[in-house]
Length: 279
Ligand SMILES: [Zn+2]
Image (cartoon, rainbow, N blue to C red; front, side, top):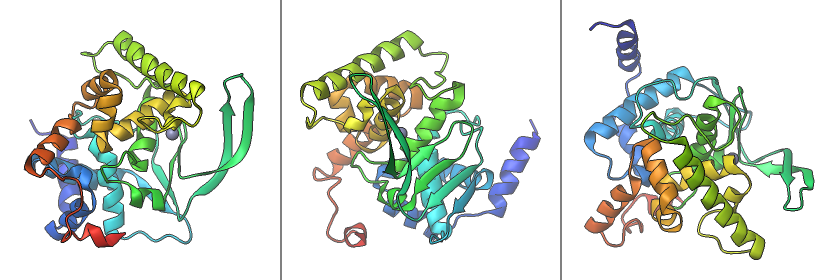
């Protein structure tokens, strides 16, 4: 059936083509895309173009973004949505503000005894309720490896969480999912991580201890691991991994394991890889 929306989409894609060379350069820089099949890559490519048409990237003075940089950001933003229906998951905000470096903003933390501490802290990203996403460019550049760090996915996971109100670690779940299962699973893993840190504050936890801050950070950090260190997350919190598989409708662990089956040292960078010299 002819639809205005589909026509607009095609029109936008036709007006903003991404060349194979451009696309390959982005894929090379983002190992977390390895193992996506041709159809997934094509979908990601189109959605990245649409993302850049719908969102306004605002680099602050000191930062200039070329087409490659914009695409690098958009692709990582769209990876979590790759298998979700083409709804407007990133609705309610239009702007992504990009700082040339980490920025200082007021921070708040309630400690175990209930005391709230406030201070100005360095941050590499923020997602404001009904407001922009803010990212420090070095954090975007450091994202995309299989290392458990992904600033773009972290901040946009907060936006998914905020789709149904405050950031509380509960994004709108699909009809096939159960809120009780999600809540029980997330809470129990969150409690487990907090118990470990209460017992040993400097514990070498399986995932970033920042996840223990509150349920919203737990969802953002575990989303980050889901796409960039699924092996670590699935080992530490298998039930959380399973819930995120239901939510994102992807299985990055299976993808990583297939890559490792083909190359046992994956993702160790090969000597001839351009990534090895990129720093
Ligand atoms: Zn966060």
